[in-house]
Length: 189
Image (tube, rainbow, N blue to C red; front, side, top):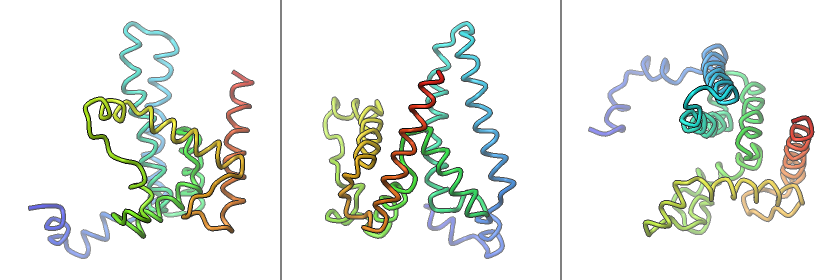
């Protein structure tokens, strides 16, 4: 039995209940997730005994904001489009991945899934050696990719085929606003 069998076994009512969107439920889950980040961050900042051990769960909580970005880009995390878009922007700031650019990237992935010529997720080779795998799971290539995307978009040098010409000004403005936000945060720190 696989996931297709399980989905096929659901009644229409069960499927509707499981896929229902709710601002209240989404905000509750968001609050719990952000609350966990704040609590663990506070413990790290206070340097409680063994605080370095808290860095792993904190990193996991922050990286999992990508999941919320993904669902918000699909506009399935909340019932309200404005809430989905606002939370997508919040998550994009936290992980350095521009939401509007990611929407274009991700929808191209859905449109061309497993098409080696057009699926942007297939543009980078998968790790084949143990060393490549260790580098891959370190997350460093992901963060470097986010930085390059942000920088390239802010400069107005986005040449990604999946970003339509009419979307380029929005992608550029988004990247510049994100960098501006980071500069202000660093200046106030």
